[in-house]
Image (cartoon, rainbow, N blue to C red; front, side, top):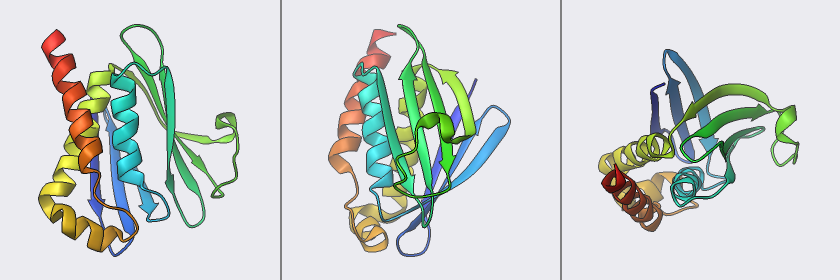
Amino acid sequence: MSLSIEYQLLKSGWAECTVRVGSTSQELTASYLSDALGNLVLAAAAMLAGMHSVATSFDEEPGEYRWVVERLNGTDISLQVLEFGELWGNKPNSEGKVLIQTICHPLVFGEAVYKAASSVLAAHGAAGYKERWQEHEFPCKQLELLASYIAARQHEH
């Protein structure tokens, strides 16, 4: 199953993310209340590094989009994007509305996140990102880390 992620900065402090799995697509938004892009990049790096599971959120006003990534076996991960009606409600994953659900290789997830973050950097630069996103710097170090894990995994294949 193919996976693509597009991430764009909108007006000050807001971003839009489109996640496509096969022929299904879902629009998500994020506010500057969290380091949405930086945390997503770290989540992808963590899964390529061998983590068993990781969750990260796009904070809304109000609401939350929670990305839940879990290792299924030696080769595949499960990716779910869940929607919650309130922000910081600490609800269990089982109470979220499933918006996206797929199984893929960690490298597929990592490459999709890397492409999304790289396109944001190309469009705005680090300074432009900070100006629009306000509360957080562009995740340069995290993106470098993700790139190194992707290169190592590609070398294995």
